[in-house]
Length: 146
Image (cartoon, rainbow, N blue to C red; front, side, top):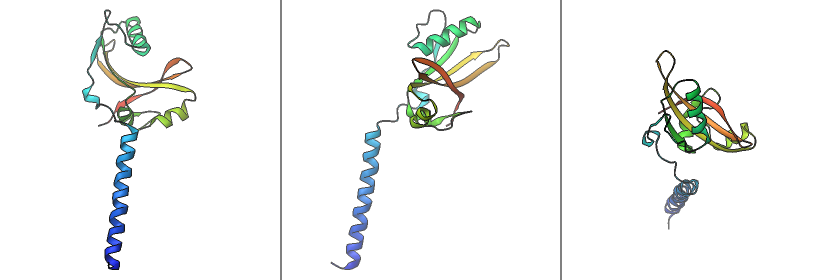
């Protein structure tokens, strides 16, 4: 074998290892989840049964403010949606950043919220909730970028 052929074989082996490593990491990290457009909008009114405490809070708060019905799109704990979230505190964050900022964080969730305010103007926002010490709180408000 010539020296040039040995170099090409080594180069191809390194490339194959890099491609294998890339796909191995992608497989271990799991699926990114559904895209934001695949989640349905759900109308929350007096008859809606909340699926979790955040939805219950949103329903109760909207009822107290006289804003029912509202529409929500609950993304839950979708990492790909978190990367698209841009708020005043976070922009394209990951779970490690959330855990660093909110010590003792147990869970997180992203929810789109759509309603009409007192002047009947449409309002749409995306909220990032974190659970710390068994209590859910709004960590940031912003929007999803495409």
